[in-house]
Length: 143
Image 1 (cartoon, rainbow, N blue to C red):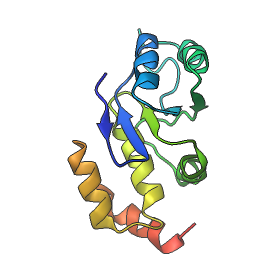
Image 2 (tube, rainbow, N blue to C red):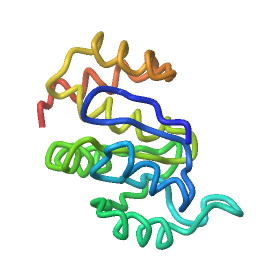
Image 3 (cartoon, rainbow, N blue to C red):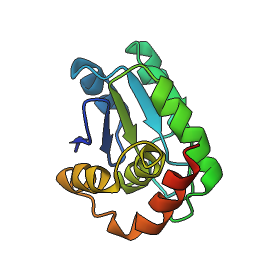
């Protein structure tokens, strides 16, 4: 598992396996968030199987699929309260971790400086500098 810590509340990862769920629980994660739709590519694990493993490990499970390359404001509006209210720490995953990082960044832009967000994402291995205009829009909305 390639877990990349954003901050004390959230880490992101590329696609995890059913077997990875037990390791995530051992590492202290409390909530598992799937931002990847089922059947996005052949051979990926079924989200229902990961959900079953998460529940068996006592993790909260959130299935919030988002289309790769097409994160909408509605997606951000759903992600922001979910991540705010989720039992922490959270492990969110998608195909590469980028989608989860973008969702986090856009929702965090409502109450965190862009520089802090860019730094946290960069430290986790994600360059999201191209999001600056959308982050500014989110900051203006303070939704």
